[in-house]
Every structure is written in C-alpha cells, then in structure tokens.
Length: 482
Image (tube, rainbow, N blue to C red; front, top):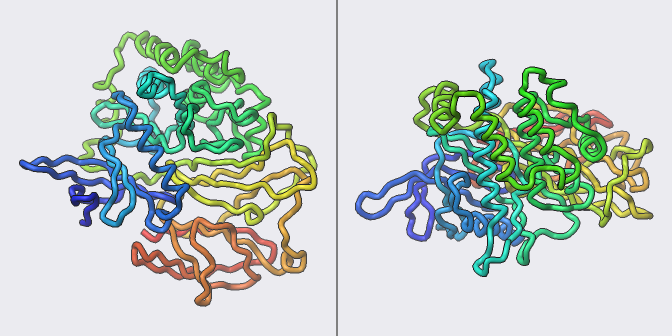
C-alpha cells in the first residue's frame, strides 16, 4: 500500500471513510527497533487541497485537538505533509464504532441500549467536552472552545470500553484567532441550539443542548423535534417545547427524563451550569441502578452486540451531514410565512467541506428588501456506497420576497433538475463536455435521456449512467465509484 509523511513512516492499510472533502485511512506507523502501531490518518481530497479555506479549516482542527489532553477526546499524534505535499492528521486509533452505528446495529437485531449504560457513555463524552470548554492558551486565557458538532456520529465507542469525542472540524474558539465568519451557523441542524439559530450565540451551553438531543434520541428512539423540511424544523426548535420524554416513553425513569429535558431548555441559563455538571447528573443516575457501569460494562456490551471484531468496521450507515448556513445579518428568526415558496437548490449553489459529512455553504439570493430569516437548506448525509437511487431532490425554502432563480418559464416546461451525488466524488461529463465536479448544484437538463459519465481520476474509475429526465421533474442520482 502507499505511504505518506515526510519519511514515509505511515503505511496505508485501508480506507475507513470518505466524504465530500476528506478521506480517513487506517494506517500503520513504523519506527526504529520494530516499533509498529495502528493509527488513523485524515487527509484532504487532492482536488480540494489547493483551496485555502478548506486547508485552514483542516489545520484549525489539528491545532485545537492538539491542545486538548483528555482520555475522552481522541488524541492527535501529528500534523504533517504527505508525500504529495497535502496536509494530514495522524490520530490515535480507536478500535470501535460510532454511537450512530451502535444504534443502527441495535435496530437491525431488535435490541435496546440499556439506559444506565447509555447515561454512563454520555457522561464520559461530557467529561471530554468539559476539558475542551475549559481549554486555555499559554497565558492562561480561556479559549472559549465550543465543539459545535456534538452528535452520535462524533461519539466513538471502543470495543475495549473507551468513549471518545471525535471531530473538532467545526469547533469554534471565541477568543482571537477563530476562523469563523460572523453571520454563519455551523453544525448538524437537528442538534443546533435555539440561541445558535436565532442569535448566532455559540457558547458551551450549545454543546449541552446537542448532548440533550442525543440523550433524548437514546431514551425515546427519535429526536425531540422533527419536521418535513429544515425550515419547519428550525421554527419548531425555536418556538415549541419538546414532547416530554415520558409521554413518548413511559418506561424511562423520571430522573433520566429530567436530565434530558433540562438540557433541552430554550434558555441556555436554564440548562446545566457546565458539561461536568451534566456528566455528574448522568453518572448519579447510572450508579443508582445497583449495577455499576464502567468501561468493562461497555466492552462486554459491545462484544455482545458485534461479536469478536478483529478488524475495523467500515460503516454502512451514512454520517449525518454538517450544515453551514450563511444568512443575512439578523438578530432573530421570524416564523416562516404562509406565502413561502420553494425554489431549487440550483439558485443558491453549494460547496461541500468536511467534518463527518456535507457542509452546504449557501449565499442568499439578492432580495428587494431585507428578509428576517436565514436561507435554509435540507441537510445532506454523505451517502454510503449504494446502488443508484432516484428520489425527490432537496429544496430550499426562502421568504416569498426573495426572487426565484433566473430560469425562463419556457425552459422550465421542457427540462428537469438532476442532483448528482457521488461517493466519494467525480467529474461529471455529458457528450465530452465537463459539467462540473461533485459536489455541485443540481443540473438543469432537457427532457429526454442523457448519458452522464462520472470520472474519478484519483481512483482511476469511470462509470456511465443513463438518466431519463421528464419535463418539470426533480430527481437525485446517488452513485458509488468505490
């Protein structure tokens, strides 16, 4: 297998995951006197490595993780250049799977995660969060670090019983040096706290809210807020209380339900005072059952669920996409008006970054007057390898005061939209003409049959896909080149 690093000391064993911007490998680090250990290498895709904004986001993650030293936070071993000149992160290898993959497996075998064990697991992750929140610079000044992407995708459970917080790719240090632009929201939409949506107020309390969503999911089996589209979802998060845990799951203990509901309070001040305080509450609940919860308990559960797993498992469950929303400078989000209209994603355009999934960077279309709500887009998971699927294309909901994209009515009557999603990425051609590189906005194609050529020079793979487009239709093509 190929190697990377200035001295070629990392030998790539196999690819574990890939996204719109980056890829993750299991690798072997070699050294003198027979030194040999497994590590995880994370690097930017070659065709994006020249983009300064992507590189800076990647380097920022490395700098932040390097400052955190805690057993419940994945450790960075090295930030360096590969043989091709691209940046990479060498991270400690955790033999295990994410909490999302655990839930997927539980559903497949019709089992439940014991709630006291679940409470213990989240408590360990919260201790890691607390270490990040309390991080200080060399002069002792608080960095104000907030993870901003707490979700089941970023909680790793090891077969040894370890619990690790992953992926600080969108973490924000509120002190000087943060690369986040004002007026942007980052994170997975279902886990965004109300104050982040309405005021762009990012504090440690936002991470506690996200952990409350995770706890609610584990207790109830669904998120506290669900809706047909992201616009409606954000409005529910802002203006509605969650259904009480015990209304949906009467078997859940009152104490655990109270912890989840406190973490989900609209007012940040009404939540727990710190991640450590929430962790201690969960640990008290976990210990109250008479049977102690520990790393040994988790290890036994993991082996019972997955069996003896000698090699890393490549997940078949797609990670939830992380969404970045660029919006007008507003201090509050007004309810969506009844006269809202739906416009195609093509009007706004998107750029996918990394961080466990897709980040859609959206620029509002010019409007004749300021609008009192952000542009919102449906969250796109990074698709796992799968056969071609045709399904309705995602849509963006904006206020009726925003103009529709400049697509002539006559053209609209004889064309359709096709959103192409390729795992991991591809150049898209038709008739020898290059249409773009995925991720890309939806294509507007004339009604009829089209032969699209999907080409990935890095993998040396090419695939032809025939697309049948009906006038006025919208469809999504998901193709794996791996």
